[in-house]
Length: 113
Length: 113
Image 1 (cartoon, chains in turn blue, green):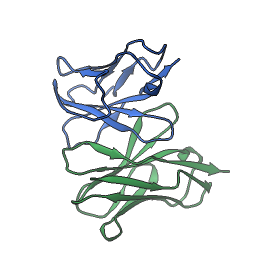
Image 2: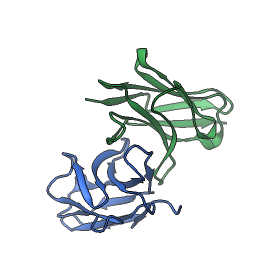
Image 3: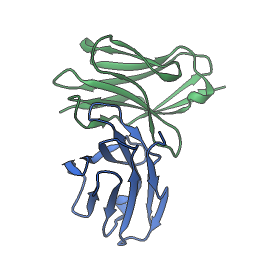
């Protein structure tokens, strides 16, 4: 069990640029979740996948956000035309099945200049 | 709609003293409840969970929590605080066993020497 891996750990970019984050879940975990965490807040659900199928998207996930999990293994989260308000920690979690506890990665911290 | 309220964004206790972190939930059906801990610049780690059965749940690092349906509470306790317990703690609720998790805003625990 190598844990959930997220890359990069930190991303600094200028407003208006596109960014992409990657999440490698624990091997054989079917569920993969994305959360956003801002300072002083708990993680907020963004979206989740069952294998390669995206099953639910939060209203927080605007049209500028897109997530994929093409082969049911790793996932990417892309933010287009970044805005100041996108600055946050983006957390990925995975679980073997939906009712099992979620294992979290260490997150990608995004800073928008 | 389900929600979680954590009372006190910051809690300070002396080393060796009792730790009590409060959590109240709102759910129209019996919930699944969790406590997670987050150390600086890291992801979340599951401390304990309540699904069904015994209402007193024991977790890692000496923590435990009690589900009280009549009070809609799931407070986290530890008999004797250790310096290494200093972290942020999140209470979370899941409506169904196969649903997304809703987190509270978190309580930062400070341990005084």
